Length: 307
Image (cartoon, rainbow, N blue to C red; front, side, top):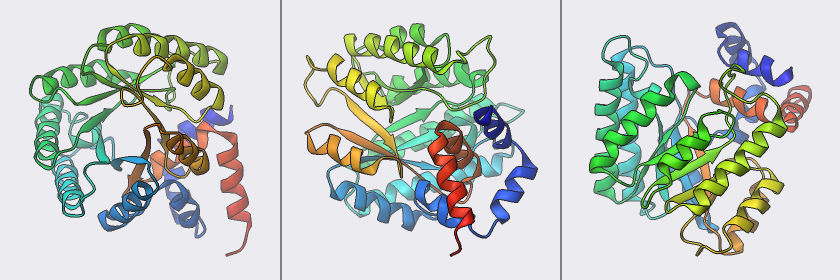
């Protein structure tokens, strides 16, 4: 019930106004968001890379309904990639892109515009020597996102995909994408979805995650294990035992279990941190609260504690 309420609130303009206007919100948000501008993102990236972890950066923004906004997001990514190169960070840092932020939701030619904009970002990433992963959003965009992925991989075969284990279709999507050169981030999923398309019970989602993970680990692609669940991480490590450690990686969110992230990296594993930045943090932040009750408790304690 709490998760459902928070996910609904993530789409509520009224709830957004309330949270953003709360004076003590910003210090809490900073646990999960690296900062409002690209300079903050670069500093956080350098810090994470400094202790042996890797990074994927997300310029926050989604549900863009004006082409000018989509163009501004593209320019933000081009600036980010340029600064990563100038600071010598591209060997360990890539970017993650939500297609809704670069035009997918536009009423006219949204999918075409999103493809063109994603292509611009991929071209810039190739020039500076790094990669791009397409984030997955709610289930209504899955087919469109995978279609754009197929188009991009013609010229940029290294473009990564994200699949969400709570969707009932995902096992087949894993089979379709478990081929040589394919990079797939497997996460549980963080959107409010109907029972017709998504598992509702946590146990069922976990079982689906393991089934999907087995498909990816047995395939010829590059699995990216996105989870903070110690049990699922242990299962992933066991399934990957026959692989060399450069053929898969673990991923976790910025601000969540950082010591565990460092432990995994210290054992010689590739450990990538999903690092979001920018002013449009509200939707992302609310989904992080929905994922774990501990995050809600942390937020509540921070609001009750005087600065």
